[in-house]
Length: 568
Image (cartoon, rainbow, N blue to C red; front, side, top):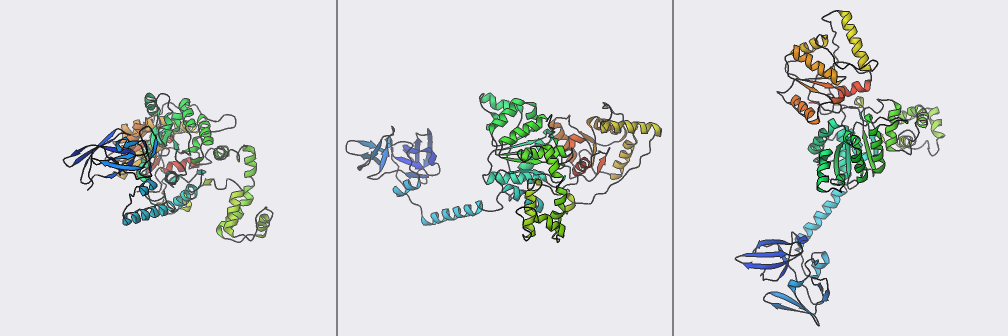
């Protein structure tokens, strides 16, 4: 056991950042040490204090409080404390510079502070294991509370290993784009390829993304809204709130509605930008939307960009071109040129299909390959296929898996319900035509629906009775229609009902969704089109389409609210 004396200098082994400590008091089995550099005081038991004595030898260089350097020529001990002397000076050890470095490798070696060989070997083995772990190809992909499904792992591996990836994740609804994005973000963070990440999602999905990233990847993200930004600025008026955290989750609607916040987000600088439901970014050459211009500005500043959408061509080729333009503005600068180039892909697609299937190429296909510069017919099929992907179309910036190519999904069963109107058939047809014209946008919007005598409500009541306690998700076109359905059901069907539409606050939507998920909660959840977008209700097995969208991709989105990976 070391003997402590007042005035001696010691350093804390577990806390070397405290600097040199000075013994102030000792006795009764305890020792009090002051660390002047950090104004900290620690009290230790003398028997097992985690302290190491700081001493210097003749010939070593020391510093005083003013930073003056001296070379030690002789040393004298007085009452347990050392006094260092030179030709015309002396310095009690209490006057040593409090920030003197004495815990580096060379300092420890010169001071004769060495560890046991077994401790050294343990430390070396730990560093070797750390090296192997950092070199692991699955680093950032393991540890998540998810099942590693092959198509998700492939995309995450391909994209996550890129430096500054700029890609469009376009898997069909329910195939796990959020999981893929989470894997990519996690991989980029743990490998150091990205340090600052901004995730932009529709307001209705903010909490869902937060929960998914936390539960499945233990990835803490910080939700930014006006309230949080104002709170940060209250403490630091001149500060940019977006510098406050490294991984930020934010509603794209919030930034679009607050230009000053959008400007701060642009100035903050990002390594990776993630945008969910990217098909909502409306663009035309004459009038791009505010949301599109926001993502475009952020995407030009950010090194990496991930766009997520299950329906890349839902709004037509111009909308698809707009997203490609965000990923690579130099490659996709002119829509007319893009359309002209796309017209030639039909000639290449059969060749790529044959190579992918391992089928022999026809003489005409071999001739077509022969005229392409840099392509040799004797290349292996996978090399030829890779070269075609890189030379034609968007190449490796789009990843899309389809449900038809996946396995493990339950079978879908469509049930068409013939309706018999309770009242005059002609009146019902007029009502149906008016509703259809409203839904298709060919007439003035209907502000208030009256569905009290609608045969669909009576049929819905019979369905709920037949299903017993099973839950049902109903999706319709608009908020107005969802509210009318709720009112009509309340008049005719004794069932616990929740409503879910875009005009509810985020907290109200989350509460209604949580109540629907509870075993004793609502049996029927009535959703509008926009309000339900991106939400996961895979615990439900019955979907009622109160009306049908004209766009088949929108219909697939509705079905995807239930029919998705992880359905129970």
